[in-house]
Image (cartoon, rainbow, N blue to C red; front, side, top):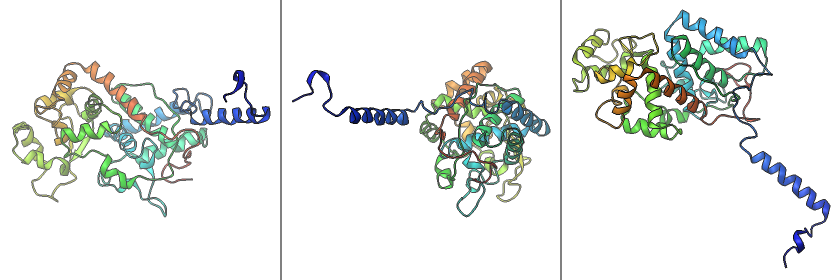
Length: 331
């Protein structure tokens, strides 16, 4: 028989205990209990963002290339086990550092800038601001420092106690990737094709090593401007091992300014990396590249929105992970 008139047959004490436990379970399983927030440090460390901005502005003023490096550092962090600052961890007895991954080694940089920022923030708010959040803020501030867009940051990430070295090769894009691979890779992280093209536009600043574009400038393909290839060959010899680390600007026109020239370059077949030029090569993203080349404001707003989405990739929240005292080692 069913319960009479909606009245429980359990003893009142059992019924009350059940409701309490059930309520706690619902709260614990509610994803809104701990979430990223733009006001996360307003009370616990109100001067954190100002301190980070000053440090990033100083670092970029010393070396404009650092802006691109900091944006890329945040990107490479988020694409491997989420935005958790795992990329900052050094090798140790329990950690195999992501810094040694093929896509990071001798490529990703800016670690010392983040360490400096962390030291400054720790001096005003010990144990409060995570390295993962510092990476996110640093990327935003780096964009602003070179004339790029700003965006409202959601904060509250915590730092991992593990590294994702084994995931890095599978999860990070390479300079040889084709369009389908890029679309698929970003899709697995919850990012659309349009997000992928917008984020690729960060290559409007920064530099690449000869080893990453040698094949492209010497293969005499039809999707590269001959004059552009000739110019790039001057500092990138044909033989492997010769000049591998020589640098070239990803955007030959305005290499130190965040603008939409990257997309104009692609239309002129002047993308430096193969993974750049595939965005405009008769495929599904040609129309997006064309749109961004004509509208810098559209590119800027889409880039900002995509950076916010990227920052949402699998953050550690609540009591997960930790707040590291030093970004390169777990507590």
